Length: 75
Image 1 (cartoon, one colour):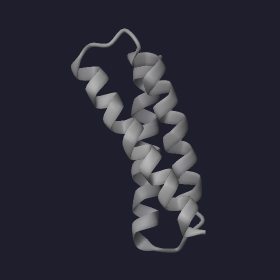
Image 2: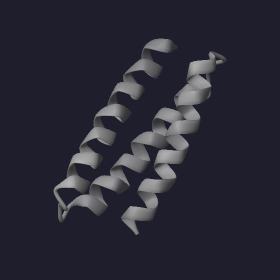
Image 3: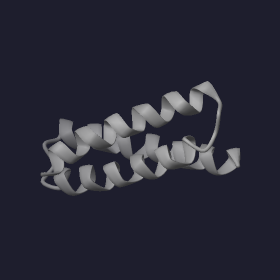
Image 4: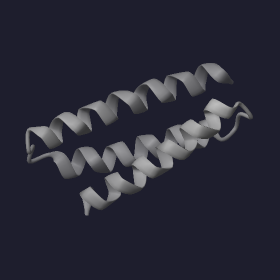
């Protein structure tokens, strides 16, 4: 259902913005936040991939890429 997809996208956008801010502040919690961000991005991508809309496919791809980069930081 698109409602679930939209909700996950909003959550994903929120955690991604937080990640950027924490990087800018050199937060000691950056690794943990990036780990959570990766999980939420994957969660969002899973839902987006259920839909055939072009923007959902693009969102899923962006989420997977973001999750990969976040995992690199979280290591």
